[in-house]
Image (cartoon, rainbow, N blue to C red; front, top):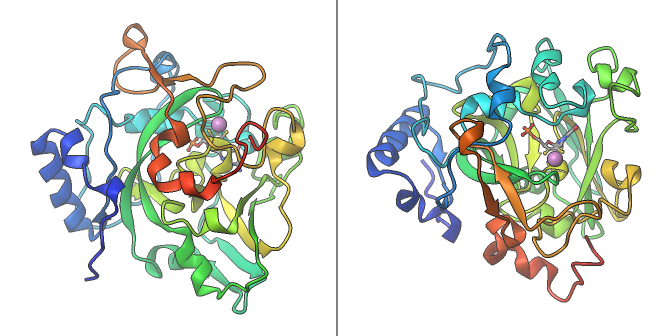
Length: 337
Ligand SMILES: Nc1nc2c(c(=O)[nH]1)N[C@H]1C(S)=C(S)[C@@H](COP(=O)(O)O)O[C@H]1N2
Ligand SMILES: [Mo]
């Protein structure tokens, strides 16, 4: 059993969750053999405008695998988490259609096992991982992160996974590698949005994303393989997706097949589509508005119904400024949006 040094953002979870829930949660995670490193959650809670959308969804079959041990009810009773049902039914995954309810329906039969993801480019030891490697080769931990979509809604999600840097280190990166490029699966037979420009929102596929190497190596940057105690559902980017909690959600690319180290800043899907609206950095920033709407506040998707929906202020770097602001020292964040 490895001992983890808990960073600042993991310390205060017991202040955010009722104590009984907190302990219950720890017990469950221990049984699952997963290390829990939480983050302080603020008093947000309560409903989102879109609750009625997800509650009107038809229930689809849940194919997700329990990650191990007993059934997990972790934090379901915690107000500050976005309910699992909403994480599963309110999605952006344009490969399966552009409206929020489509991915859960259209991705239901998406094949995520077998899977192959390749780490290559400017590394000394390129390698590939198959489906089982994702769950066996890295020590999984749970992390509750905020997710802030550029469309000004947000969720708090208990992800399971590991730091991206665990993968990168294993590949022995070369000094000249300055960026990391990511690519989603290209398979129009399975992904109807890739076969039809109308369904897929006019995006050029495969979906691609990128990070600077220091962003990629930051311990908060995560590869997620699960949420709410189970493997990811296809609509959330199974079997593996990126989670960069201080950046707008579109950086957190789903269903990854390639991680490529390079010395050039890689193209990114939303920047290609509308460069004036979506930059390479896409750091959450309440002081830099989207050309068409304010980013100063967000609608939190929580428990409850449409009548109790609420807005909350958006936080600089989505609440992770203390951890990541130093990465951007001296940079003009209005120009590098
Ligand atoms: N391949 C791919 N990854 C993607 C997207 C997408 O359309 N395709 N949408 C992004 C956007 S805009 C957001 S907000 C998040 C949503 O993740 P979730 O549906 O798991 O909440 O996924 C991101 N990753
Ligand atoms: Mo998004």
